[in-house]
View 1 (cartoon, chains in turn blue, purple):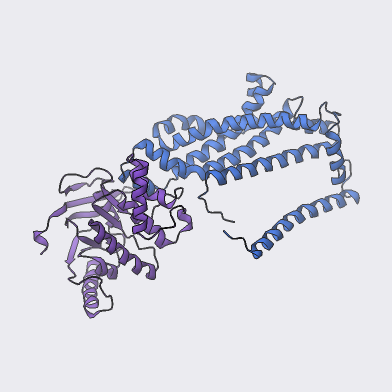
View 2 (cartoon, one colour):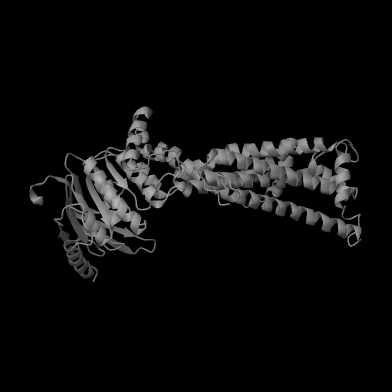
Length: 266
Length: 254
């Protein structure tokens, strides 16, 4: 497709608009603190957040680790729980969507587990796996499993029945219908599920680390609260926000590769 | 004239009803009998919701009748020996044009080189050369249905069922596609059962037109437009024929 001058200008306009939203937010934030509307001890201004961020890259105070150590510790847990949830949840959801016996077998257990908030698992997991990484990965896994499984399931269930008929009239086997009709048609829904699973994973990570950890972004935030270091709290929050956004962006790139047929609704 | 022709599909006393969640029974087909002759272009004309799609599904073997029989000369065809063109194209959105066309042979495990070659020939036949690698989302309605037709013919079926294939197209494209489908039918020598609710389309296309009544459906009338093709839809003969059917159709609805 040819990109015209007009398109380019419009894209540039959109980009400037997005940037200006962030800039305006930062300015208001700075003014609110500078003017003393909110005390600097309760809300660190953006300038302070930036200096703390740079400082935390090399300074292990006050929580015993530099920022990147916290970040890697958290990233590892999140990715482990998230990947595990996808590896188990997606195939299970797809199979449940197509094969009735699997659906009947898994659904009752799943329906009971589903409404339990991931955070409510923390006490059980601590007892089961101790206060180490195992319990945190398990909690993140449970949190990410629900959206990954549910969306894959719904994706197969929503396969256009006429497409299944097309395959049936062509003499396709049940296995072919599942693999060549239902699974591809579920792909967009699966990606929605994976993205939701990722954000659930990050959300739950912080909760898990708030309870028991000696390193990690959640721990850093919790420690910052105890010491009334609002600048550190904000740095930790922004790290989570930014890395979540980056991972979600990467997933969108993968989606474009895997599902190039989808019409962009941009 | 029709009597000395070979019957390809013999449908006798077909009954089919559906029961909804509230246990209301809806009789859709009520003792429908019909012969389809080899290599004819049969149009089944009927008002909306008269069970035309149900009839096609029964012929396809996607559903079983409550009562009655469907017999094919030469035994019940195996899956894939009856082709179907669907109302709303029903293309696989994740497959390109050529992948859609070769989808059915692929289910049968036909060798890739062979099915590719056949798919290319069919794409040429329906006039979609150059669009082999486009996804359906990028095609217009008329082009999508060309893919649908090519895909149906890729099964090498000698019976082709078409369920209001041009119903979603604008008038201009519809006329164009009617010409195309006649050309393809003549070049491929297949038995076509074409369902429509459009009288003009029926008169343009059919060797024979069977009029179905409203639910529960039975054959109400049969018409044979003895007009040479291509038929001019503004000619006196065409318009008169059209009016005759329109009158009968009004009766069928009341």
